[in-house]
Amino acid sequence: MAAALQLHRFGINPMLLEQGRQNSLLKNAWCVENYLGNYPGESEIKLLKRLQTHLAKNKIKTIKNRVELFDYNANKKL
Picture 1 (cartoon, rainbow, N blue to C red):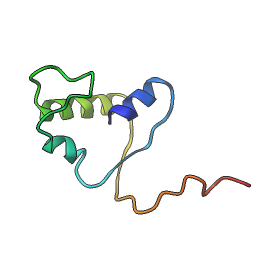
Picture 2: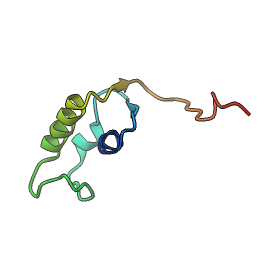
Picture 3: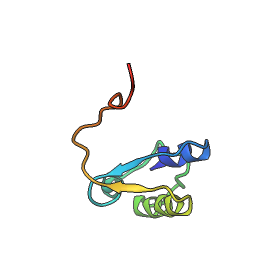
Protein backbone atom coordinates (compact mmCIF):
# COMPACT_ATOMS: atom_id res chain seq x y z
CA MET A 1 0.00 0.00 0.00
CA ALA A 2 2.78 2.41 0.91
CA ALA A 3 4.60 1.64 -2.35
CA ALA A 4 1.41 2.25 -4.37
CA LEU A 5 0.95 5.62 -2.68
CA GLN A 6 4.56 6.61 -3.33
CA LEU A 7 4.32 5.60 -7.00
CA HIS A 8 1.15 7.67 -7.32
CA ARG A 9 3.00 10.70 -5.88
CA PHE A 10 5.57 10.33 -8.67
CA GLY A 11 2.87 10.24 -11.36
CA ILE A 12 3.00 6.48 -11.92
CA ASN A 13 -0.34 4.67 -12.02
CA PRO A 14 0.13 1.67 -9.70
CA MET A 15 -1.70 -1.64 -9.78
CA LEU A 16 -2.43 -2.87 -6.27
CA LEU A 17 -3.25 -6.56 -6.02
CA GLU A 18 -4.64 -7.96 -2.77
CA GLN A 19 -5.92 -11.42 -2.01
CA GLY A 20 -9.04 -11.36 0.13
CA ARG A 21 -9.14 -8.67 2.79
CA GLN A 22 -6.99 -5.64 2.27
CA ASN A 23 -3.54 -5.96 3.78
CA SER A 24 -4.22 -8.72 6.28
CA LEU A 25 -0.47 -8.98 7.01
CA LEU A 26 -0.53 -5.48 8.46
CA LYS A 27 -3.55 -6.35 10.58
CA ASN A 28 -1.58 -9.22 12.12
CA ALA A 29 1.65 -7.27 12.65
CA TRP A 30 2.58 -6.57 16.23
CA CYS A 31 5.09 -3.88 15.27
CA VAL A 32 5.82 -1.70 12.22
CA GLU A 33 9.26 -0.10 12.31
CA ASN A 34 10.17 0.56 8.67
CA TYR A 35 7.39 2.93 7.56
CA LEU A 36 8.13 6.63 8.04
CA GLY A 37 4.45 7.56 8.18
CA ASN A 38 3.89 5.51 11.32
CA TYR A 39 3.46 7.46 14.53
CA PRO A 40 5.02 6.14 17.77
CA GLY A 41 2.47 4.14 19.70
CA GLU A 42 -0.01 4.01 16.80
CA SER A 43 -1.62 0.62 16.36
CA GLU A 44 -1.24 -1.28 13.13
CA ILE A 45 -5.03 -1.14 12.66
CA LYS A 46 -4.93 2.68 12.75
CA LEU A 47 -2.06 2.68 10.26
CA LEU A 48 -4.03 0.32 8.01
CA LYS A 49 -7.11 2.56 8.14
CA ARG A 50 -4.97 5.62 7.38
CA LEU A 51 -3.37 3.89 4.38
CA GLN A 52 -6.79 2.77 3.12
CA THR A 53 -8.05 6.35 3.43
CA HIS A 54 -5.07 7.63 1.40
CA LEU A 55 -5.68 4.95 -1.27
CA ALA A 56 -9.33 5.96 -1.61
CA LYS A 57 -8.53 9.69 -1.57
CA ASN A 58 -5.97 9.22 -4.37
CA LYS A 59 -8.31 6.89 -6.30
CA ILE A 60 -5.79 4.04 -6.35
CA LYS A 61 -7.64 0.98 -7.55
CA THR A 62 -7.21 -2.23 -5.59
CA ILE A 63 -7.78 -5.48 -7.46
CA LYS A 64 -8.94 -8.12 -5.01
CA ASN A 65 -7.85 -11.34 -6.59
CA ARG A 66 -5.27 -14.04 -6.08
CA VAL A 67 -2.25 -13.76 -8.37
CA GLU A 68 -1.09 -17.18 -9.52
CA LEU A 69 1.01 -16.10 -12.50
CA PHE A 70 2.36 -12.73 -13.53
CA ASP A 71 4.36 -12.50 -16.73
CA TYR A 72 5.81 -9.02 -17.09
CA ASN A 73 7.07 -9.74 -20.60
CA ALA A 74 3.82 -11.24 -21.94
CA ASN A 75 2.92 -8.20 -24.07
CA LYS A 76 6.42 -7.10 -25.13
CA LYS A 77 7.39 -7.47 -28.76
CA LEU A 78 10.75 -9.06 -29.52
